[in-house]
Amino acid sequence: MNIVRIETCGLRGATPEGGWSNELKPDDVVHTLVAVHTDTGLIGVGSAFTSQALVDAALDLLRPQLIGENALEVERITETLHQGAFWMGRGGALTHATSALDIALWDVAGQALGQPAGRLLGGRHRERVRPYASVLMDEEPTMTDNLSRLVDAGFTAFKIGWWKFGRVDRATDERTVAAARKAVGEHLLAVDAGGSEAFFPGDLSWAKRTADMLADYDVAWFEEALPPDDVDGFARLRAYSKVPISGGEVLTRRQSFAPYLRAGAFDIVQPDTTKGGGLSESRRIGWAAQDYGIRLIPHGWNTAIGLAADLQLASALSGTDLVEYKTGSAYIDGLVSGGWTLGADGMLAVPAGPGLGVELDSAALGRYGTNPTFADAR
Image (cartoon, rainbow, N blue to C red; front, side, top):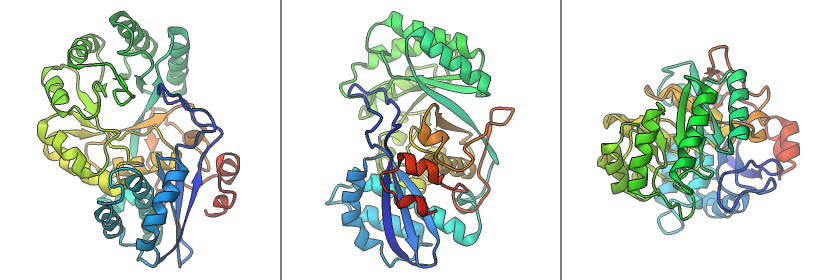
């Protein structure tokens, strides 16, 4: 079963805010779907957390290494793409595009073998995974009303992040966390400082003081407390903090995670499968993290295809019992047929169908996709 064609489809028209200082607009394309077509008619779909322009440019370089290759040899293909990218943007747009290709190839392999991708990735440790509702911080009435609605909708885990946290004063930070804790009650609550924002001002002293405050509110983990490159700072913070420390969402490739694992920088490592190298790399990062006693909880502020991939990943890793659910995003809620349904206990079923186990919704693609023919791909 050989690869015969690759096509892309950017998503625009409902791009949610990202919390960035240079805020996203609804028509900004920062998520791109990729379809891998085979000579048998099977088509796999993946997702990249990168603009369509960058994915298309990356594919100009990668396509010659893909066309004619056996689509079932997923990790040989994607590792070849990683190995061949040393001189042409390894770790950046080429890795982001490879992430989508890798997800799509696992989707093809699962369809070809009649198995969910998670089973091919190592087996299904679980059939259901708890999603945590991921929301941006905001002024108290807006944020707490949103959180209360999500509690009523059945979510039992939550994460608040970015906004003014760590950027104004200590009182603002604590007031925000206190309001969120009151809104969600005893449910799991995590806090994301958004340290990967440009020129994030938080330093180690701030992070230590904030970790003490978060411990008082029984916060499940403290995410991106420092700028992403500060390996030593994260290691020192983790050694100090009573609250678990997490990060890694902007890192790419397993080799970039290795120094953080060796340094003991994280309690929880959070690769984004749509940018870090795909399911193949996330699985290898998860295996390596497990050897250090570190959990993997994937970063998932992307698309329904990314969520489907993370659910398959969570089924295949023994310690991954949570996935991120970006609430209020049409690219999550409406992109696949049937959408997502929370169980009465706040859990999501891991799709049991072959491959990723989801089908793109043609109407949603017609509304949000930049490629009018992509809707016919599935």
